Image 1: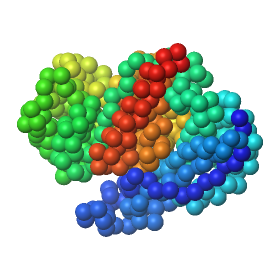
Image 2: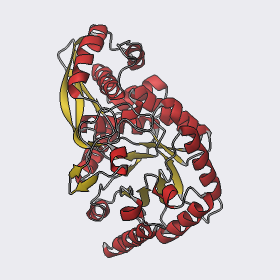
Image 3: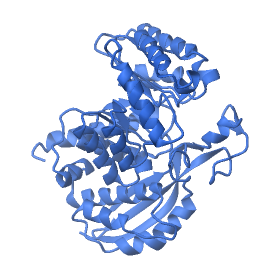
Image 4: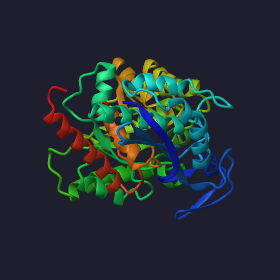
Length: 416
């Protein structure tokens, strides 16, 4: 089976792209409208609806495979590519990608992706969102040609055995962090709330008192819902560096605070994503390593640290996995770009016995969210972020429904 044609069109992401440094410089959210001036190159406004690109690959038999990609919400910072513009992405694909891949054999995804990596465009490599969309379409096309799910294609080409258990599913509530908890509990989500703990003054507290109170409320809310002992969710907070800023990057103070927070949610497991945000990757690795070493002295279950900032590429994932700097590494798929890099990143985490958290962005689409499920199942990822959007319900439905469909296929094809 060969590629008959490749076409691209602009599509919409499931949320927005935000100029994060602009918020730190004084931009203010008024409900969803943001007042302020953008400071990061590529942004026209501080907040903009997310733009994505869709790639359609038509096979010789007329069937069509699809892949989509775009920018993460906080594009253009901490080593990430600039925000993706759909019109520019479509032109790039039409001029530089489609002519090279048209007519290619759909026998092996890894060969096709190698070809994609070699594409030379003015200014350098393909933007990561474009690579995400095209490589996703290529993986889907190879799977379609083989009449099998993408997870099985991944397992075949990387020599993997698909685990019987599925990744845990986590959510992000957005700023509606109280209603989001109720939704997560109703749906018995594995890890919540994420919570967008972005600002010291309003979300965290000068000494973390706001987050401590929120954690107490979550534990009380679980009781109010009347959950049984069989439901033991992970309490996951994405702190966007607020812990480091509040405690002036003092490792002892941060450790003591996290021990207190873990005590609040005990016996449930506490996960902390991005407790600190440094100016360079070297500083980030050093701080995360020191904090993780100090937390090993905290009574079990000790808080788990998740690497996020400065962890955008396959080399970045390898750096965090080998530096003893995290318990889990977020593999933010739109930042890595090539699907093969996300697969390799998950396998690197497994090799170094740390958790692979197959993350992504609220600004993804239903197509990329469903494909992420196949990557997570095939590689045995520990955790996967439900996406797109911040509404919880829609993202959980998209992610879990794809998990259910894939597991049914695998059950009915046991020799795969």
